[in-house]
Amino acid sequence: MSELLDRTLTDSADLVAARELSPVALMEATLERIAAIEGTHAYISVAGEQALEVARASKTMIDAGHRIGPLHGLPIALKDNIDVAGEVTTAGSRVLADHRPAADATVVRRLRAAGAIVVGKTNMHEFAWGGTSANPHYGFVTNPWDTSRMPGGSSGGSGVAVATRACAAALGTDTGGSVRLPSALNGVTGLRPTIGRVSNAGVVPLAWSMDTVGPMARTAADCALLFSVLAGPDPDDAGSVEHPVADYVGALARGVDGIRLGVIEGYSLHHLQPAVDKAVREALGVFASVGARAVDVAVDDIEGNISAQLTVEAAEPSTYHQRWLRERPDDYGEDVRLLLEAGELLLATQYLQAQRYRALLRRQTLAALAHAEVLVCPTLPFTATPLGEVTVEIDPGAPEDMLSAIMQFTGLPSLTGLPAISVPCGFDPDGLPIGLQLIGRPFEEATLLRAAAAFQGATAFHEQVPPLVG
Image (cartoon, rainbow, N blue to C red; front, side, top):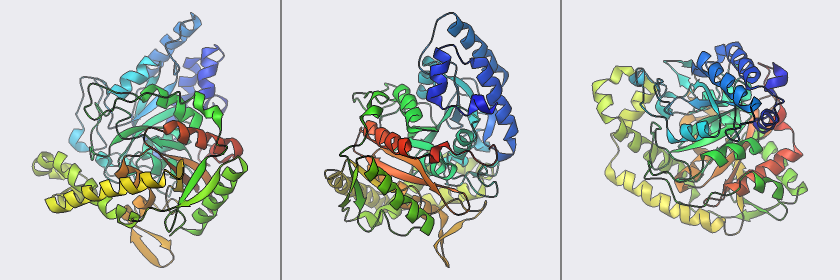
């Protein structure tokens, strides 16, 4: 089983295309691994026999010389706020426990058109409103590097599924960091696209002005392959943007020679746990060894980003949930219900001031990106905390609110609508993964992906296997 599952998405795709890997054998191994990690609560539902049936059809087609697309026969997991026609989409909540959408989300249609097989729906923080994936309805998702720790969220199930090889790759959604956070804490790679680059049609929203779907996989090359399928405008999503789709896979070979990595003064290397600080500084050294160079840049008003993020990410979800919150309050988990109730207490002036700040922050961040192709910082200032914790200590003896601390670095791309990628860059003394975040210019995901690929070409952090399955 390990021999089949330890291959990357890209390698598996090539082997299937060459008829050297059977989609049936790969699916059987994947389903066996899903069963083996059941205690992590990574999945809410598994397609099982349906996925095997599609795998058999995929094998018949490839044996006959017919390949649907670049993901032919590969098992892909979906966060359970992404619609699959006729299948329950819960968004991790009892509120939608019986919700069966009539149509696939656009991203699912694109995956199927590329030959992918939906293997199951992954667990998440309820309605994506939280960063720990402590789900009271479908089980607390646990971290495969230490099952007493949290995996991050809200796409925690997708992060665990990818890390444990319980799918070839997965989709998550990212509002305030929900692809990047679990990517960092589970030692995988996750891309938040430019806002509007990937369709949100058929995805249960959190905060619509910041929501986006993003790929989560073992490597940057895998994310590039997935992203090449997902990217592009969609008439069913008024928020999607008409912009040329790059050759994300082809761009990987260009490397990073001469690329400038912007280190934001007083921010990128500020307020970190020692292990995170060490890993990020060493990552900058790795980049220097492959031709990139660090430069100092300034974003003068960056300190307001957490407050603005919390304001927008409170007000917009509360608007969406207003009716359910009145009619079915007991169907929500307590943490999410309290956040939604708090969001209704915000003044219109507070929300509008947060939006004004977002415009200022975007201008300042784009100005910094005029002096550097990529901005660099940790994905998180700390490593995975014990399950159920609501505070975290970044500085010893000074506990902080978990939600605010989680957004210290992931909030910047979310507020500004810019693309960002998290890549594994080390481990703390307890063997817990550390993530490095790269932030790019609008629609320049190709630059982020090739920078991440160059880093992974010079390191082996992304090759490590969690103890749970290692």
